[in-house]
Image (cartoon, rainbow, N blue to C red; front, top):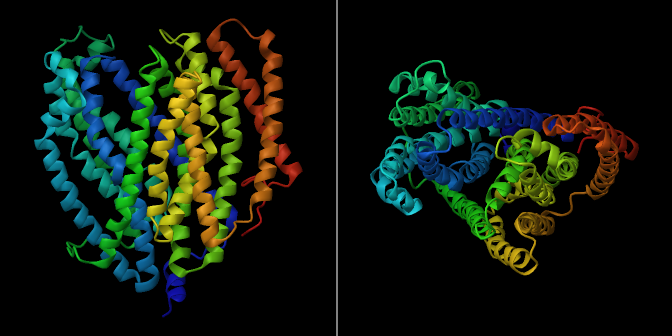
Length: 550
């Protein structure tokens, strides 16, 4: 049986074009959105029961250590490397060889990350001292952080195995369950954490809520230990939620170890550059925080609030489209089908433009009511809302670039090239520092300059990846459609601005109600105008108009 016949027997035939890509991205978007909402609930649970004090500082610092390692390699880098290699083996060597590779990766990962976890537990005191040396000056804070670090370090192993499961399912065109896995993590963390906290610190939760006697302050430490155990429960649930789907698509666990296997080595070879690229992102975050720390009180918080709102469309649109695109371009790359590869990437980029350009315009225009409705309470005053909204407008300029990179980077992995995205990411570190210095130190843009620099880096990275990929595989043929989307976005923005301006004198003085009414009035109008402009300009809108295939 030839490669194409084998592929047809093993996987669905891709005939849906842009509409099918949009439907699959919609499934992932819904799951990511649910996860982000549950993540917000999880943050609120911590805020309600612990406030901003010793215990929460210790938890955030302790979780940051394994979570940083996860960001560096366990999810994005591992998933992309595994999907590309698994797909190649499925196409060229058959299903049995592909499942063998999956077992080899799972077992090798368990050994390597398991050893790393044990080392992290042993070295926890040194790690805490390195990242939070000031904790030693507060009695019990460093010791609590070390204890929580040791409890939560196995989370790294759980999330790494969950990333492999996600890669397997995405390759077999199962997207909803793995995308919802992080929602299961948040749910497990909330329910499991509160359950363990109630068990380890009886009366603490009820006391905080005023339904019992005031809790002994010493119980807060034990309750936070319960929340740390709950985090592990969430990580386990994130993995176990995918197991039934793994069984249905044909995966069967085997205790196989073969460190010299070419497929396993290929996964490791692709992971290396991808991990370095992820590390570059972390370095940029550190540099931005360093510059912001010199701007007085407020800028770090304003930037953090603004970027939280940016993360929603990046996850709901960019990550979703990148997730469903990766297995498709991996299959086309394995088959050597350049035409289908170009068509899929082109469809994905058009979808990014269709979703992210109006979202960016909306965030830039409506930053004040969006941020004010959620955050403008207590000590977060109207000036803070305005400052965060200006930062959000700066970030919004780069939203399409962020999302586009989520499509283009996996395309390079599918071509067995992880070095180009890595080099671009490393270049971004230099560019980011230079732009931060220029915008903040020389031009005096303040914290908004940091947001603008971040957007400029994202757009620059996207532009470089796009040029290089076009030279390698040819053009994508979507420029005219994207220009029409830009025009429709401009019409939407102009109308939305006019409506918002016209409402200015008719709104009540109460800030929360004012923010809510602005959003309630402007958002439906903006959506209707954008949809109407797209129809008038001949832009295909998934779900509202039948799309032409590739």
